[in-house]
Amino acid sequence: AQKITQTQPGMFVQEKEAVTLDCTYDTSDPSYGLFWYKQPSSGEMIFLIYQGSYDQQNATEGRYSLNFQKARKSANLVISASQLGDSAMYFCAMRGGSSASKIIFGSGTRLSIRP
Amino acid sequence: DAGITQSPRHKVTETGTPVTLRCHQTENHRYMYWYRQDPGHGLRLIHYSYGVKDTDKGEVSDGYSVSRSKTEDFLLTLESATSSQTSVYFCAISKGLAGESDTQYFGPGTRLTVL
Image 1 (cartoon, rainbow over the protein chains, first blue to last red):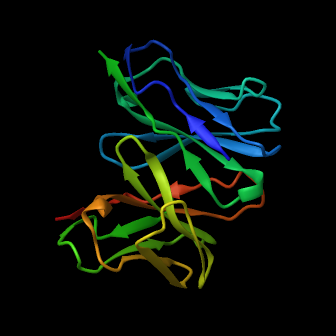
Image 2 (cartoon, each protein chain N blue to C red; image 1 turned 45 degrees about the vertical axis):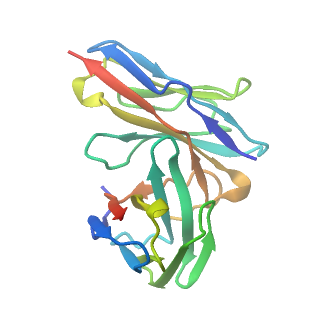
């Protein structure tokens, strides 16, 4: 069975610092995809970044990067130069290649940026 | 942003009454999904659709039914609402790309309270 674990329920970070949000996963699929979503207090789910299991390089999107360590089954989100607007819930999610229609989500990490 | 709307955005109902939530997309995406979000659980898949009149169950489908008579609309029905179905409901869409890279984009959510 597939599983996503986010072990940090909440984090506080000083503005302009970098922050790493942890995500570990478990799957028996040789091919899978990993996603990060942001949910601000307004409630919408915003797609941030995607990493494929066969991608040779870590994914990057602006200030977001994904630290993908396949052997350790971790897919940590790194936010560089944090901003007050980064305060939100962040969810890690995974899709397995054998169940291409379904994504499973972690329980989330609440990130709070201090001015 | 993906063109996804949900209606209603908020609803309060009583136990035992039927409730229908609507998801409408303007992206012509093949796949549509219904999730519920509860504290400590992240998002959990209720049902999904891979085409008109083609639907399948997710991990928490008991007490819910869905219908998709047009590409753009996906309806979620609670036949007889219970207090345990108080939640925030999200609709999502995806293109239905082969493999694990198919990204899901979410609607704004519907907050449902069952008294």
